[in-house]
Length: 470
Image (tube, helix red, strand yellow):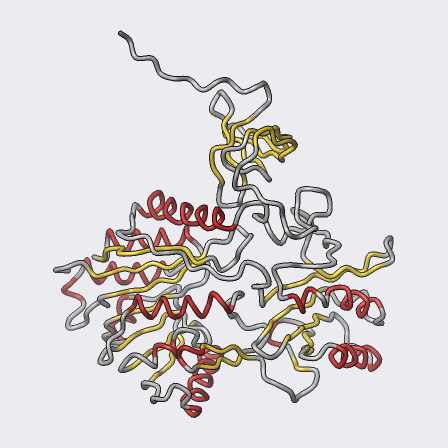
């Protein structure tokens, strides 16, 4: 008796079976000849028709035109500006996918990157860090355009795959009070003399303040400044900043009022910041992320810790409530000065109920760090690494070099544990490959952090433990 392989019934001509979702939230299908088709708007397990926009030898780019069999994970998008239609907002890519499936997709992206790029498999998959899925985005950059043909000003994100600004009247990923400002902001800019020379408004929310940074290409008139002040008076909590050139040129329009800051209540820390500083977009998830990272790092009272890419001290200051000594390292003297100022402010406030551990800050070129510099920074039992999208390749490479040349390190010892917070799974995987295969570490745990719901952005956290005997 011959076993017969069960064959799937052939699809009608022109239909495609979607099998996966890629990192850009496109459905992935294959034609009968094996050619890959990336379909914008399609979801796994759907049977669809699509219009091809771009062809290459091995793949095609297409846009969904019809769904013949719908995924059980497809949901109705909450925002009326989301979709594939002309003029659709490009701020979100995954509102049509159930949020639990979004998180599962991001976890798969993380695991695939770790394995295919780094040949690393985490020993344990961490429970995803999740939080509010709407109104979470406390930072945003809105483009501003005066559209003469329509006789209106647009304030919002760009249209999907376009340089044009979407005609947004509401936005569900920013806090409701910010969404309610979109139409008043359009009216405000439309009434100003500088209607043609204000291309951008940057948003930064603190616990008590909503900062709006107006980018202006020409000096503002007294009349326009008065209108900005009137807007702030009419919308309590709004604070205007002006930016004439680069981010370093920002100036507060009027002194006084609450300071732009966010709190980490578990640690008794308050973090003042400027609206153009880098802070996490999602404060709800950031609080959980800091707490999770410190638990995973498991700092003991007598240990020294280094926080690489320390920024303003988002992890450094909480670490100072746990460790014997902390060293925060960043790439510029200006940022180091800001983080030191935040440390001194919190130390003086003594909100933790116990003194903060001695903490120093230093500037280093973190993309050209050498083994010699690692040793100069001294022994630390644990590291917290939170790099930008470029990752921490030089840091991992320096660790690997010291591991492979034990005679060069003298009495210096590598950290026993590293917690790596990543905003790019590809560079995390690359660095993980170095740490595991060349620096003597095991990847004991990894998981996703849903910092940006409804987008394809993958934030993650991984733990590396020094292997026994290395």
